[in-house]
Length: 146
Image (cartoon, rainbow, N blue to C red; front, side, top):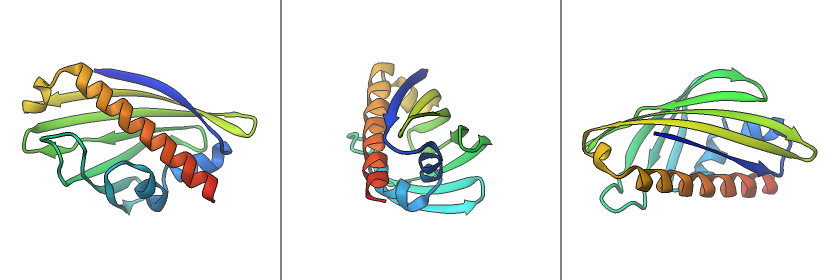
């Protein structure tokens, strides 16, 4: 399944790029995120819960980075394993400066196995898009406070 979209964030591109790697900013911006810890220069460990009935958690999710080209591009890869299956999520993020703001575009590819793969695609997509909307609003709030 593929999901794509964009968001205009009122912050300079370099500041937004740095925020996407800042554990404290991410913890405060990601819905249901309890902790974010840097494991090494290319891996973050998140402890998360969800608002999705039957999938509440908590879950440990490792996010690896690839193809990092500061301050304009990155690929984020997560492969959480849960009791009800696994998901492989690859998200390509591009940042383009637009005056005092930054245009963030993303392309996500999701592969699911196990029971989670039987969830209708429209529900997974709407859940991911809803979480991304909250993430972007949280990032905007965090960046505005800095």
